[in-house]
Picture 1 (cartoon, one colour):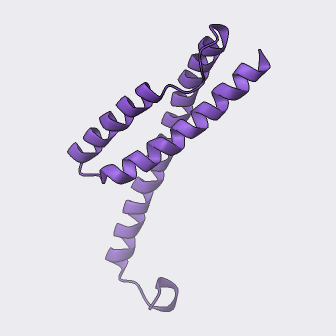
Picture 2 (spheres, rainbow, N blue to C red):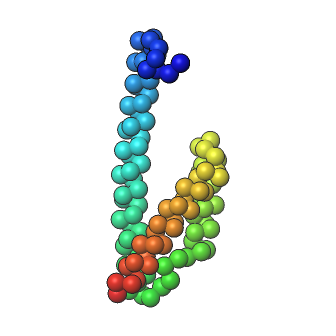
Picture 3 (cartoon, one colour):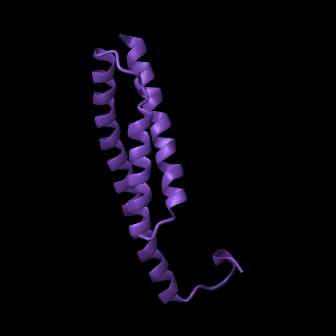
Length: 104
């Protein structure tokens, strides 16, 4: 039965609320950290545009992916998931760098 159709033990409900509160706090931290990361990558994009460097840096991307996979493994997080997550971020960063370069 779903929570809406059954009486939930008050202790279980309290624990769910506590855990969900932690999840909400972590989600907020992730969003703020991503915002900070993108501020830095925007500066990188401006530097690349100024010096006419390509938006993508495949060697750096490979290094970052390997680094993140190692960090994920050490943290008991699926390295494949961490790689997918970083690839998504890298694609967005490259898109931003291309936009910055097009503005110059």
